[in-house]
Image (tube, rainbow, N blue to C red; front, side, top):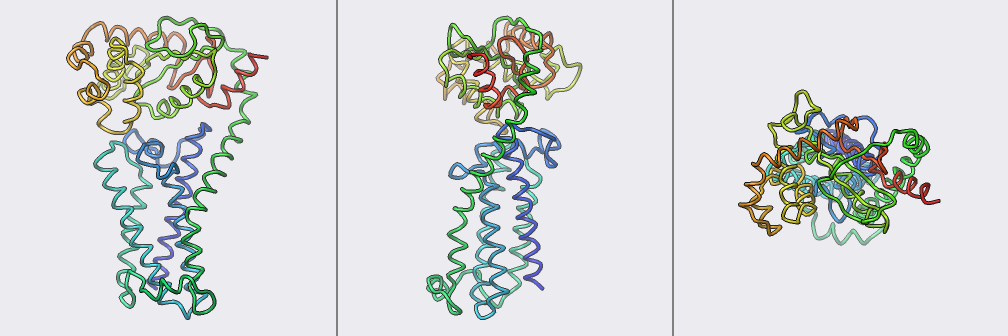
Length: 386
């Protein structure tokens, strides 16, 4: 009975990892459909967590690793049923897997609650499931949580006396993770391509907008392809878009990226009648503006986004130290009327261009839906250079 309960807990964990993995690839590769079930607010947002620097291991999403691990875990249960002669040994590996899962959950839980300010409901559910599974198996006292020396020797043997299939399942974990990652990323890239015709058509029909001085710009000084981005530093979609836009600009010699601030906070954005988080978004925007006055606006832009989802993103003393900024001058500038007026003017330009959310991307003055998706940018670039 205990093993049946354990199997159910592992199966539920596997299904949650599948969902989180799917959510990650949809979000990471730009095909953003309906908001995921576990993204209910800025604090409880699994999309935000999925792209945080703490959600990857060896370049792969933790959800993908978890999915592969739980496939092997479920396979152990099937071996326990089909190999009655080796059940005690297989049960020890099942208990070892539950111990590994518990330790991993403890580590990720500590990171989540001490280093992040955004949380994933389904991730926390997985932590609880791993604890419950460990407790259920702990009551199965007939075998220990650590396989014996003979168990490890049997990993190299086949037949009725061997555990070679257990070894195969363990070795398969990284292989399944890397293959799933490759298939997942490739599949969503292909899926995003279906919207290209519609998006490019909308761009062609869109009215051309005129913009003033951007907060930041990089790339060609004589561009043929100008990307204008309106973004907010507490917007997870903007953090996700940032890498794509910078990578695309750096891949071509005739592109310029212009960054405009559009804080989703009524404290400095006249387009918002109400809403915000006490002005923090405005302060982050002013910090980047003031860093640019010291010639390090893009570095501050990256520094803040790199710490997205943590309280550290507004630790300007630390930012000043890391980026070699004059902290006193930075603090004075952030509190100045000049900085407030500049950010408000930036937001007003977005309002006049009918920016309704972030990131909002324009190319050569025209609104480009999904303009942060590499496939969309490449398609339009190719079209304009024929």
